[in-house]
Length: 287
Image 1 (cartoon, helix red, strand yellow):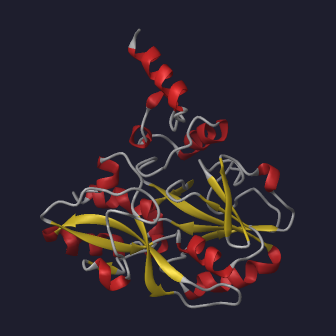
Image 2 (image 1 turned 90 degrees about the vertical axis):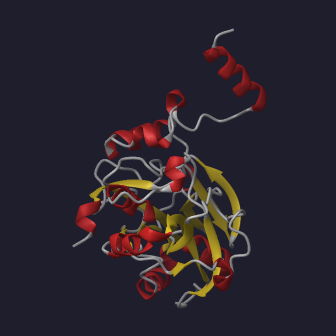
């Protein structure tokens, strides 16, 4: 039996999903155009996390809420710009985007979505067309994946890209500013940075406030309520070497923690690490 048949047999026996077409990884799409990758996502050929894809282009988190709760969330995002830097807000019911991408459908062009009802996770889906309603407002929120190419260009390692996995994300004890219905604590993403490059990483990411900007915390995870770096609340654990320090950035998964705490009747989000890839170049988010 050749390797292709072995792969298929293992996949069938253990019901392992194909996350990327042709057994590729996210980093294999680093030079692909956002439109091409969105088409593959829409077809179901990509269902995995998107860190490392379409280098140079911004990625975005998604929150979709009924219009009756949209103003409260808009106010929440304005009050918490580090965790929720807004890139676009749609008209009620619209699945089209104006500011961040063309020829895109926000209900089909993310690899994996989550559906919440009254703060409870109901399920994960590769598209949410059947759940779409005329009163839904979509919020596109900046993502720290966007500054990873800047880190790499500055010779700063990005561990989850090296290890072909999702970035580790953690709930914290850092409170967000409440707005109407919405309240809760910040979620952070973590990247191990060599000690001598921490200051450089702060400067590189600080130049991009529309995609979370500078770190919120450096080292000492227990002081922000993180008990174990080996067990992230979202995403995957990554290797932390002896000469490295964990560095924490505000994360666009914060709204999902807030949704679970605030319990709106209905909400659609991306699955953590499975982002919407925009047509916006990262360089344009610096100005």
